Image 1 (tube, rainbow, N blue to C red):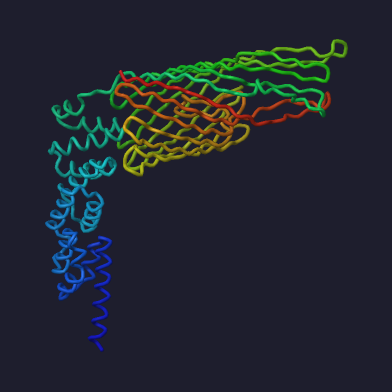
Image 2: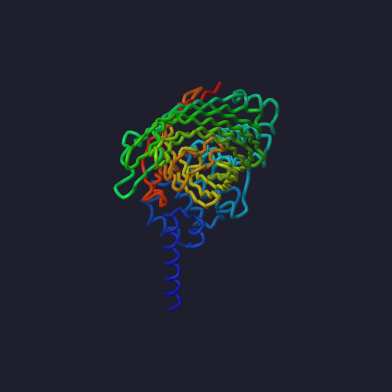
Length: 481
């Protein structure tokens, strides 16, 4: 009876070992097998192992109970997988070895270079950085660490690392310097149906209606980024917006309308400083000169209705502080800002994150949550995704939901201080990369809310809100000198 149960136990261990080998969990296999069953295993699995010499090698080592967690064995296996450029197997070997406190230069170098060749730059940097710490003089590893960062668009991190190396290596790695000035020029237009589709807003139940229809808008924008050194940059921007608007008044006796050109001029400045370990901080501000017009009427018992055109100029300001962190497979940022508009100060707190599941910028998914606090509190959220199918092409999409009136984004360079609040945005964008410049066309579908003042009597009135859709078409051109 004892022999029967002993054979049952050994059979169970053997099944666990076989299943573990199938899943390539060789440590579990080793702990499940016992001496005295070599021939059973080899005979039963000879067909399977015939095509998997590495698995056979693991099996033989396990059957003879050679400790799998020895330095020599990890060295041998990691080298075999390195020659095959098998990143999945290298990750398993490395993770298990580190659990057993086995760590050495070549182990980190092999998985780091393999990850680099697979374009998983976050994983490559993680291990090559340790390899560099174990053997700082190795120039091959130095180059791989540098390009793991640079190829992942972590240029500041790459140059900060290069500054720690010899002058010869610095000259080799940084022979192509980043441009001192990078200009970005954007032009675009917003298509709005409001003026074209103007309708009777008074209705049969009211005696008076007054409002403004916002039509086509055009804009020009230029931003200059000055790279002061590898840790400090200064950006300035200038934007000009012109909106075709139509003020209207509808009464029981007479209707009238007047066309305007409303202009907004915007200037921005932003300073960013890199600290260390992927962390940067920034401070910025903006000035906004907004000229708008309105159309209204008054009633005189003798004269009847007479119409008045009103011009309004508003000067607004914004100031912001932000911080960003770029880590392995992720980045996140926090921003707080103050915005003055119509003698009202609005506070804003924003948080956003991005994930890099492939360890590079080929696929990026992210989102954010934002709160604006003034006379009423509003919360806004956004989601984004980008994909780079080719080295010369990036496709991206963004979705925004919430009341974006007077919203400050993108370090203050994008401000939604439109006359009609924007409630929802869907943006599709393409980036075409060339050697010295980037061309970026995009289209944004916006849902806006307009309000019409309606009087049911001379003393009773209400605001009637309605939703309309616009399309913003934009073309940006970035030039690297």
